[in-house]
Length: 342
Image 1 (cartoon, one colour):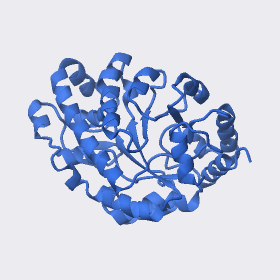
Image 2 (spheres, rainbow, N blue to C red):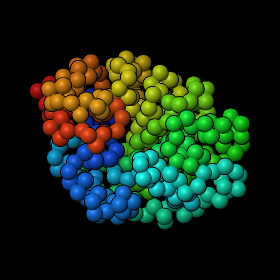
Image 3 (cartoon, one colour):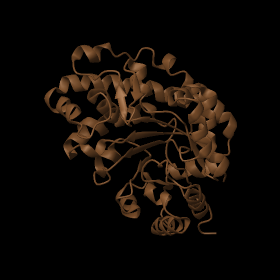
Image 4 (cartoon, one colour):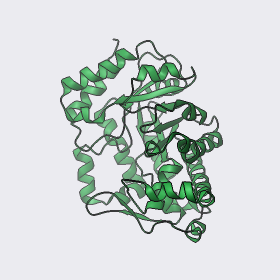
């Protein structure tokens, strides 16, 4: 069983000799070779130039013996393709060109040219697929409709998500109209990724955890479920909703093959509470990679021991890797997982 086969088997909760391992999106941003590229090119240039996206995607694989790569891109390419550009604030965070506040704003958004505007993504995927061959899996991704909506309604990064929540509660028809467009755009985007050669798709619901249980179902999982249904069995789907492992029923109802779990839960307990055909992904605290190799080995082994004998586990961080992660810690993590049980 090669590394790609191991990853796909784990997605389907089938027995594997050890858990496959990959990290999280923007997996290479702790690397000096990535920082060197950032000195020459803007983030948008890296995302929108297929050859550069290939380089950034494969940089971690040249250092670490991981089972899968994740496409280098950004979740906000969808709002941009719908007609709402974004940029990075000087002191950190995202800023949209404007905030959605009216029906007219939402009506101006269009899904008609999503494939054309995002053609650089499948172009990059084809290059990456050729580079990886059949030995390693390639994971595509996008943001969840709710997470994208928060940026679009708030006008950028937010600490309270008050405008987005207010639209959900007070203007449900307007909110639904926006979510319909975002979801339609994401489905078309994911289909281009599948056609170009990804082996699996992950939906990042970064801000699901700001919602109450009932709102979570109506504002988030309902729409992710539509995406999973549209994808069908073409590739495995992974849903990661940060801070929401306590609401497993609506997450399972999305139909995803794999649920990502953050570091605040005991992974074995989550896995045992799920149907046999739903795998888990996780769940090392990313900050541990900022410490020492000894601590990394200890904490990774703790998770592996906790999951011993349980099928359907993909080893992963509990959220995105930080730029402060230490290379020697990543090396220790990958070595611990890939040599476990030998």
